[in-house]
Length: 240
Image 1: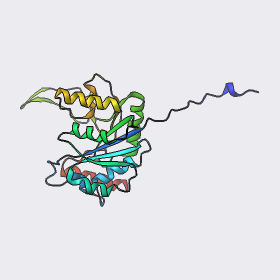
Image 2 (image 1 turned 30 degrees about the vertical axis):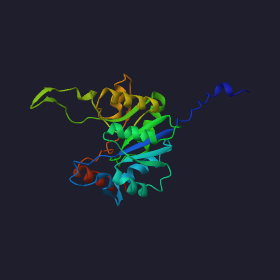
Image 3 (image 1 turned 45 degrees about the vertical axis):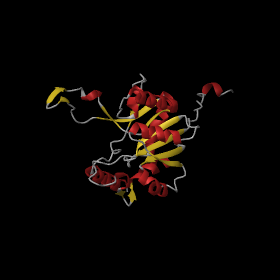
Image 4 (image 1 turned 135 degrees about the horizontal axis):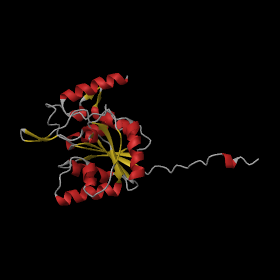
C-alpha cells in the first residue's frame, strides 16, 4: 500500500539569514549619579558582560560588534575575550545614530540582518533575541514590545492635551532587527535630513516601511538610573 498520500508533506524551513548584532554601549550615563552603568557590577560581573553573553548564547546571532566610549575599549575587549562571536569593539560616535552606523560598518559583509541592542539591557534573553531575528527574517523589520500599563497623557507644558487609547500603545525594547541594507539606508537618510530619531525603528518608519512587532519581556528593562540598577539586581537574583 502506498501510504505517502496519507501523510502530510514536511515543510522544509529555510535557514535564517546571517545576523550580526551591534551592542551600543557608548552613552555618558548622565542619569546614573556618577556610576558607569555598562561597567556597573551585577551578580559579580559588569553589566555589559550579561548583555553580550545573551547574544553569544543565541544561535540566531552569527557575530557581535560592541560600540563604546574610547576609554572603555580596552576594558570591554578584555571582558569579552572569551566570547567567540565578538568580532570587534569600536569607538562610538556623537549620537546613537552615528554609533549604530559605526557598529554596522564593523560587521562582516556576510551579514544580511542587523540586530541593534542597548548595552544597558542586561536581562535580555536568547529566547527574545531569537524571536525577533526570526520575525525580521520573514518581515524585514521587527521589534520586541510589551503592553503599556499606565495611562499616558500627551502634555503641552503644564497642561494635558489628550489621552491616547492605552490599548493601542506599546513600550518598545531591543534588540530591534532589520534587513542590513534597509537599516543602513534608513540611518543615512535620517542623517541627511537632519532628523534625530529616538530608536532605529523610527529611522525605518520614516521610509514608510512597516515593522513587525513581537512579544518582548517585562524583565528586559533598560538600566538608566541607580534605581533601575537595583531592580536589575533583584531580577537577576530571581533567575538563580
